[in-house]
Length: 309
Image (cartoon, rainbow, N blue to C red):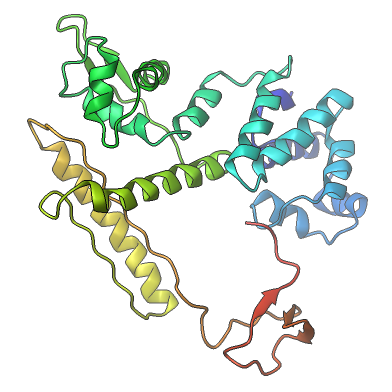
């Protein structure tokens, strides 16, 4: 029996709840849901795949279909808001609502994982304790970080990393060491938190230009033109390079400093000619036109009807 309160991702819940209902009643189908919701039969599958988000109306419709009572409907609505939040603060707000629900079965690790992405320095502390002889001197460890952090921030970071099983104290040496505990950043539920974490690291990288001399940092940038296929190849090259970096540092026997390597690959222009989608409309400087009509490359284009990312 599917328990709604064991989920933090509404798409996972809908998929499991649908399969359970469909197994017990073949008439409960995508077509049945489409008729109830007032959309075409393919839309439900697009929602499950993350290609479409739920509107406020569809949240109410799906709650009526899949939820048993008002408590479940409220939890479902908060779960949708959590998954579709536009920024980190909204995500955090709705996550707290979800885990505060008395019936919620989600472990506290969900809150801890979210907290990990709150601050850039948690990853730094995790690396530092592998070679710095930390035995509770929070202020001293905080001064090792660049830019420095406070003793209270170190204390809370150590506690968080222990709860997440990312570090542990060696009973023989009395010092901390890393464990295999990992944070998954791929989940849709944590996407806004990860974005916030990356933005923090970009700020740290920007400050590094003034904090360190040229002999201590390596900063570069490159602008170029390419097509979609080349872009995909570059993404794969970046992934391979990251794996090579991890393999190389894994061979380092005596680390003595924490470094950050940031990699960003993003567009600096719109594609030309602009992509065309059959059956869609675009607004060009306030004028609505059908797809396929001529468009000047300098015109500003706003796509209508697309799903939120």
